[in-house]
Image: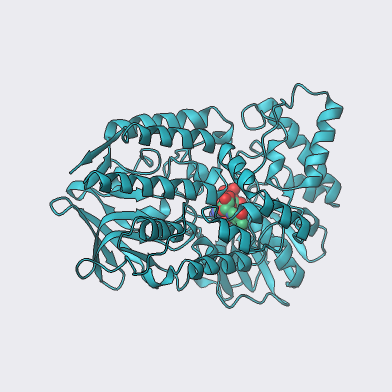
Length: 547
Ligand code: N01
């Protein structure tokens, strides 16, 4: 797609406050969607962003140790060759400030800021059928209208602060990692409690432990983690990547997870024990999410998965000196990678420090937060700071907190009270001209996110171009297509081990009262892309289009 920037801004509204398209969110997806609709199609577009800057999830998640688990050279946009040639990454995995520098560079390079309004939170969106317009209301009470409404709100942007009794009585300071203060938190000399051992808690633990007087990690579910093996980006590797970006991007688009590596064709069960061990050792040394690709059946065959579980368990036991702590860290209750697998830098090593305690809140649950700290069934922990690394109301949360009402005033919240229902994760029946980038029912979080985002943005942009060429004003997923898609999403999940993790946020299980439905599409990114392309080639099969 060419980087065409028209001489005149296309983004002046036809009449006050009325736009061709409104986009909610200025993260990876909102920025690229703005560029595509404005600079490729020439539409009038406004982006409404709650934060004071671009970045989306990276704007909010500034917690200590925040770093991307995808490798930097492939956690980036592919739509502009000039952009990928001019940008240099400094490490194997980019740290949060580096991703922010990158996204700010993108916003400047493509002159995006003039069409983004910062500090504007959308509180309601209602579809007006007679006018075929979306009416959007902001927290400040402003009203805007648009023919197309596109949510670019991310999958992990609605913080989940657990409802633990007594939190309001705590006399220290508490923070959620997804709403981290922009001027940072000084842990020096402080007694810190960290609740949660997902990807975030596992990244934050070693960094907080390095300066805190004492760190207590409250673990409910032991988690698998593989070393990230982060390090500086070698100049030679960067040159090689840039010389081969075309091929690398082609490969990323053709794989299940949107990463530039293939999953092995071998079963973990067909190789001899010694060879299996050697392959796991090599993958462990290499580090990163690629560990999942060591064998083709790790995510579909429990016996194969068990071999990975045993390997990781033995590695943790070699690192952690106290056998009782090692027991707590390895009392796994789910298959490896059935929850999003973290990668780490010295997470397990941190439990060998004198100033770190692991607290098992599975056997001894948190009872309440007191003015002094956290009380579990069996102990009291005096704290100056509590850090909640307790995750997000994922995928549906960011959409639900905007009151979205479709045809006949029907609310998305009511419609999804038994779980999300979309067609391709892109549209919801009864909500014409609304597109949900990386919505539930699409691969999104099971994929390297920029790959999933670019695929959705390109598909939406092509769809709107198709409509404009034919004078079509309205597109809406049919209820029948959505029903069939939901069935297919369930089948795809059931063909894997992913639903076996009882507490996974993929299932909504981390938020009390949320329906347990496997939300992302587990059929693989490459297959999903083919399905979406096929739907478009057949004149947007499963959608009803009107004048
Ligand atoms: O959240 P999580 P996260 N009492 O939901 C625990 C992405 N990400 O922020 O498992 C006690 O995974 C909960 O325990 P349990 C990535 O996709 C990406 O870590 O429910 N504990 C769990 O241990 C990731 O998967 C990157 O029993 C409570 C933890 O809190 C996603 O974001 C970095 C509790 C939550 O883990 C979310 O990760 C970080 C309670 N009441 C994250 N409630 C990068 O690539 C919850 N927990 C950079």
